[in-house]
Length: 208
Image (cartoon, rainbow, N blue to C red; front, side, top):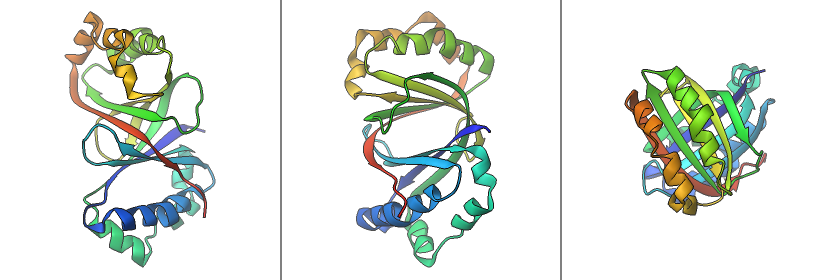
């Protein structure tokens, strides 16, 4: 089985916050957790002042997304069609895991997603494995880093998904070191697209 991530940005728009959250928490997200192979789901709110302001992410076996059960829950109810039509953003991406470092956590307080496309994927991978991730994980509070390759949806090709204790880590000397080395500068010269987002925990998806 291939370990995967279903990753969804959303912005309520004309649906409004109250209706958006009620739909997501009581219909949309619980339906996905009812599918065999989708093991957990979490919702996070933006801490970086950017839009879209909401992220939902689900840990799963990628085969679950090809199952009849998943196809059934993707058939939209009349209410879901109404809400989706009024959202400003519903950006769904699917990723296959290529690396996992650190401790397993449940509902980390903060997640940092860094999506990249590059002309040199091998060089980027080596930098993450040999320098960047070890430097980040030398900091107490930098819990886990998983890296993924996009297999569905739009956006940059690769994703680094970090689980951390607090945004205060960004002010630490080790963080500044991890993000300002000469090797990083060489790697980043080959990057053609970059999307960095920071989100804080909102809730855990429950099956209704």
